[in-house]
Length: 603
Image (cartoon, rainbow, N blue to C red; front, side, top):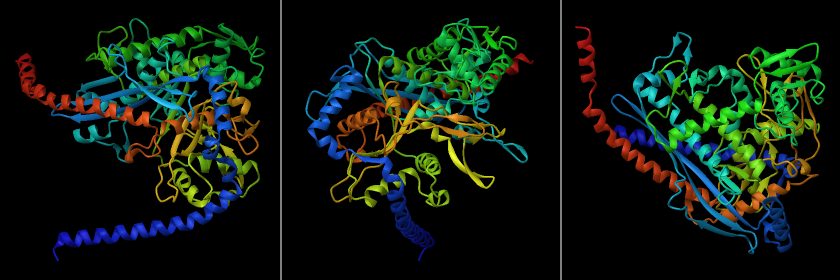
């Protein structure tokens, strides 16, 4: 037997052994899951299959749709994105783009009717950016890592590999397309926006300290961002009915910014902010004073902003729109650069700068969706997260006095649990889903500390306890295809949905979680007493209509998002061909000519 045959044989044995071991572990875990399902999980899971077949239940869903959308003919847009990076001899080229497919859903017809609409020829809804960046710039834009011996040194190929700028540009394209459509005229504005991404996850990933952002050095058509402007932007979105931002002790300055915006004035007092504890008001005011946002008057117990927070937010929006127009519409070769203040020099955006712009766009999109009653939904197919079982159900189990050690003995991911459940409960038929749970549980969880279980946030490297904002996004896991014999099933989908005042707050149970470091937190909670919220029922029905199962590779996945994926990949193929041809441009202008000019200047 040859050496290569031995290698193949050893790999086959290792593979078979690993598969057998994993199968045995799943059988063991399924027994533990069955017990946890009967004790707790079952109370937070619902099968919608029978409801969607019942004519009376469908009429109720139609009534919910008419109340929310004020119409039985609802326009939707599904958005997907793609990205690519390519290293040439002297440049690294990045592409990021997004594409949307559109149509209408009719609730007036039995079972819901899906129709696709073509975009008008004079309306290009694709957002595409492709830019070549010199290697010296790339080294500064790669978020550095250090080892025990100091900074890690990368070669050119490694710099290209670890750079994430193309994924950031892709997310910016995705959010800007959604924002542009949501901000369009009443006749063109969709009432449902589907995004092939975790919108709650993006919101969390764009909330970071302004110290890591270089945009403050920029001049954007005569406007610039101060540290106060950046904090005001991060404080959004605002929703007074849902109490967003909340009154917890984490980031209290966000609430002060919102209070000033709601009252349409620059000066606010602790008495006016009656839902904030006096010490929390003072903490927030001192932070704002420290970053130069205004002045704290300790005698009056008041804080006065130097700039109206509403005007500051509008400035951030203008800068976001200016950058995106330049990058995606005008295809400006300097689209990933900004002009430095008091200088004609250009600086390249860092990945954090791009993500901050994504954050501005998403926050503006959320507020538009609240104002115009646009149902915003994010869909993710794959994830290794444990937010649902570990964080959410772990916290619920603690509040109900359950055995925490027993609960955490199950090591499965949320997706593994969701895809096992129909095999544990044979009465669970597709479409089914877990009840919506508040996205604050992406960070809020229970820990065993000081010989007791307690609800905590996550700790940063600086020892600061942090958590995600509550009552903004709701998450669930759902499955939309199961064959009658259950031998064929679709992936479980992770569904993010924006929460809406007058709907989700009314359907939620009243719950208050008291924490030592963060204060009181009041998430939206749906349990066996409330059942799934009305808007989750509507969302599940909409997704069930959109899941057509026409394509074997996309079973249980919304068809419009699959169509958008085709569009995004088609754009990518064209751009990759363009990037391949750009090699001739680099070869026609070798750096040897530049070196010769430099050499001549020193003679």
